[in-house]
Length: 121
Image 1 (cartoon, rainbow, N blue to C red):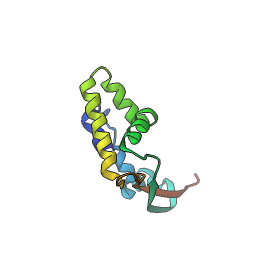
Image 2 (image 1 turned 30 degrees about the vertical axis):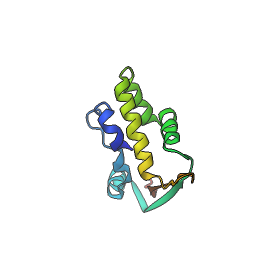
Image 3 (image 1 turned 90 degrees about the horizontal axis):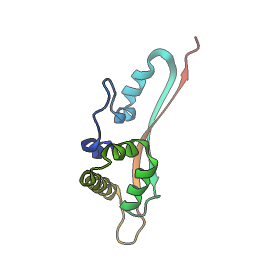
Image 4 (image 1 turned 135 degrees about the vertical axis):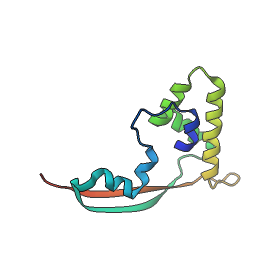
C-alpha cells in the first residue's frame, strides 16, 4: 500500500524510516536491541474479507487509515492527482483480491507478530 501511495505523498521528514521496515524481523529486533529478552517473531497471514469490491477498499482507507488520509490531505486541490491515487489504490485492491464474478473479495495479508519481555532495570 505504501508503494502505491509513495508517488503521491510528500517527502518524509529527515530521519524517518519507511513503514514497511516494521515487517522485517531483523529491523524490529534492532529497534529493541538489548532492552528486551525472550524475543519471538512469527510471520502470519490474515484473510481480509471486509471489502467485497476494490472500491470498498478505497473508500475505507480514504476515511479510516491515517497514512492514506494524510496523503489525500496533501493532494487536496489537485483533482487529477486525487483521481490518480484513487485509481492506484483501487488497482492495488484488485491485484490482491481473489474475486471472480460475484464472489466476495478476499485478500491475504502477511504480518509480523513479535513478542518480547522488557528487561528490568
